[in-house]
Amino acid sequence: MAEVVILPTSAEAGDLAASAIASLVSRRPDAVLGLATGSTPLSTWRALAARGLDLSRVRGFALDEYVGLPAGHPESYRAVITREVVEPLGLTPSLVRVPYDDGPLATAGERYEAAIDAAGGVDLQILGIGTTGHIGFNEPGSSFASLTRVKTLTEQTRADNARFFESLDQVPMHCVTQGLGTILRARHLVLLAFGERKAEAVAGAVEGPVTASLPGSAIQLHPHVTVIVDEAAASRLRFADYYRHAWANRFDWESL
Ligand SMILES: N[C@@H]1[C@@H](O)[C@H](O)[C@@H](COP(=O)(O)O)O[C@@H]1O
Image (cartoon, rainbow, N blue to C red):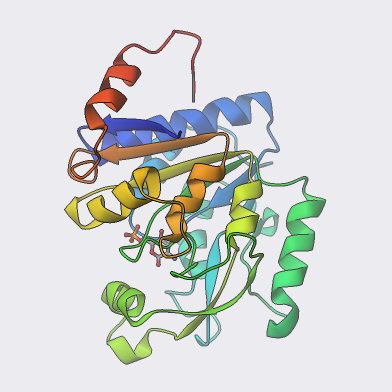
């Protein structure tokens, strides 16, 4: 079972996720981080930036990227990651990749998988979760063995993400995303979720049946997962009291 930590605010959640990253980087200054976009990880990046660590040797692999946006579009995940992660944290731009850059789309997945392998795999993967239960952009029905590939977004995900664009029809239809199989190979998964809108997806991912219908449930197959949620996102968790109890009574030597 995943370790589930329920905290009062997203700021405290971000601080805890930042401490997991900080402790990894202190052991391994060139650690490989899996980077997520979206609003959820923002408190993590903020808390990490506040620590003022030297992260210049850290390597980064984004979870996903849109297909079909004009080059340099401010909502491309390359641009978002540069603005929200690379610059505030002082990462080295050339050490951070997104799954679709230059080069042919048809082989983008293969090239990305090779790059992750060459880096020695992802040490810690930050994950958000979509209201469809997607992680990365692995929409319902995604294979648990899937690797980085092109996917078509659901209309629900396009509508959820329309807030970042001027109108719904500007939201791309396609993306390149790490597969569930890719994500499951990372050595530590840290999934964050905040707010009532995420409560159902969180309950399904943590406690529901392991099913391609809710791609986030793939985390139940991973040996080292930390789920960090606020009270609202935890509101549908059946075993919430147990998670609180276990966290309150953890051993000193236990760290994320
Ligand atoms: N591709 C991203 C996901 O990686 C992210 O986890 C999810 C949740 O977004 P937010 O954190 O903004 O709720 O939506 C986007 O579609």
